[in-house]
Length: 254
Image 1 (cartoon, rainbow, N blue to C red):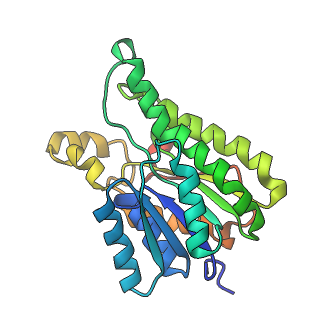
Image 2 (cartoon, one colour; image 1 turned 180 degrees about the vertical axis):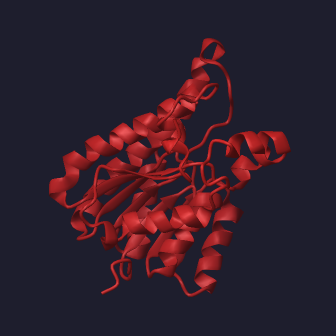
């Protein structure tokens, strides 16, 4: 039996129009999972769904801003209405739009970062849990960052948000284990996506970043997606409350 076969299961994936989110969607779909995809840009998220469908998968697209308080209920209810169930929730939407020292950071910026990375995730979990508990394979994957595991100078707001996500993952895993729902965090390191293009634009900056990575290269979105498949599937059936770090050895460095 293929422990990574997701045939008959349904996943809702946020932030799925590009980078890691898109790669996760494509990876799960290639293993038989029907996927509901959400992102803010209608054309971009529809293009991902069309691509998956053209390759033999089953995908539907939602244009949605997860920071809108009404979005979580709509995404979950429309996913279940269209695809019949919900087995896997991948909270990938998140990010950071500024760098600033704590001393001069506006609390409005702090609040926006928490709203995107933490609050939106909590709302989706609350809406999704009844359906995940009704599944025989309920799984939540919260996509974090190594910024939540180490100091993040100039990005304390983002690091704090991702650290909160890690703590949420552990607490929730204990709360819902008796319902048969597994909750894990996927923690990428430096991944080659358009969100890190600015670091590769300067040779010295890129060298500085990679000097802290023992494998001395950027990770690929596909490598994160393969780890997500493991967490979503029965291959990780006895794993919950954990952080799966995929960072080329970055966090092992002294």
